[in-house]
Image (cartoon, rainbow, N blue to C red):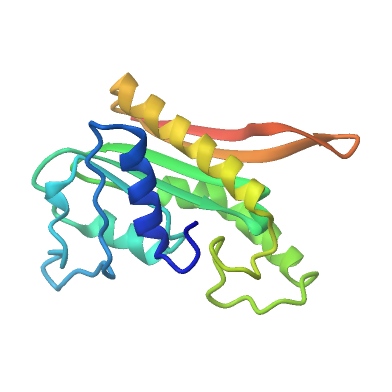
Length: 187
């Protein structure tokens, strides 16, 4: 039903349809900041900011932004074929993604070796792209897991920075679950 729509709009419409109290809004612009670290989008308007771009430059901008108030920031991305899920959650008005980068870096380096096994164009291909080497149900499982993790974080009112690496687990070729293979807690 959503073919041809921007993924941001599809997610926004879906989340708003699930809950009559939701007020999800789309930011359909490229996030940037100026020399004084002021962003081109007024991020202080939002209580929860979810980044699912998989782009380090977005996290770097969020890290350098001078926020005036407290926010919950969640960053969610998937690895090759969505076999891994990377999530970090922070609550505050300053954000530091260095511990998250340190946590996921060995996994990303290991995946780079696997890229050679795929005869596909790689630049710019995200989980939304038809040639992404993963199935839609892998993305759905990652998305559902992410929503639950973010929701639990918000409900718990945690002040800690939490970072997770989930991995798909199989037994005898049968999918069993996404499992946390590594977790980091700071603060």
